[in-house]
Image (cartoon, rainbow, N blue to C red; front, side):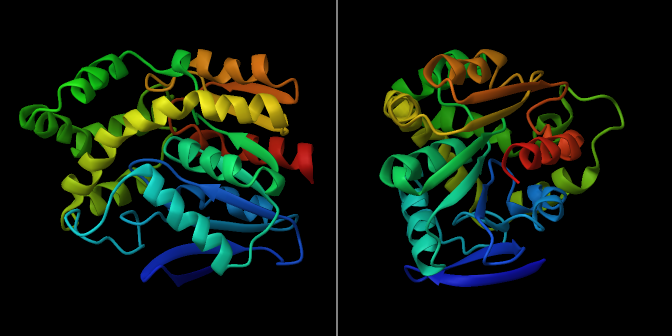
Length: 279
């Protein structure tokens, strides 16, 4: 495993890298509130068969995090930086693992570069309205009426208790290591974190608006998709996992007995599914 940073459009993007550069590229795109650290167990499983790269988005993990007044924290802009990261790293064709925030980022990249995508793993990476859990109805009200009070209220998403619950809800007691959520809690204390993440919570509405565009890509290009979904996730619910199959017959779906961060408890199973499909 190697750990490095590269300058992209004037900002440093941190990334983890393993495997042989002559093997097929496998890009791992993390979600909220985590970073490339979430792939710490999966990468060693894939490195013999793939060249594996996991970047931290701008404002996340070890990547540079400009103040929200100085940087446009939108999903489109985060995608622009990952897109340019690929150019800087000379990454062409690739497999892609998408989770949570990684879904709209990854699918936008796929829309832009459909010829480069060799296959997709979606682990609770939602692009369907039917996959939105009950909490999203309240988010929609916020998007339609973005008051200062509601923006402040949604900062509860960054509370340590909320972050821990994201990891442990839907999982067997004692099955989740504290390493992941402890690191996320540490990052949540960084300068300007609540403001830049609040910008992204508000901008998530544009991801939902882009769902039809992402679905059109799935229907038209029919990439090989491996769905590995924590079926107990209250945020992105099971119908979102099953929806891929209706648009793309090249979909293989596995509903795993875990929550939103099912990779924490089922990384061996998910890694084996990936290797069985593409190695």
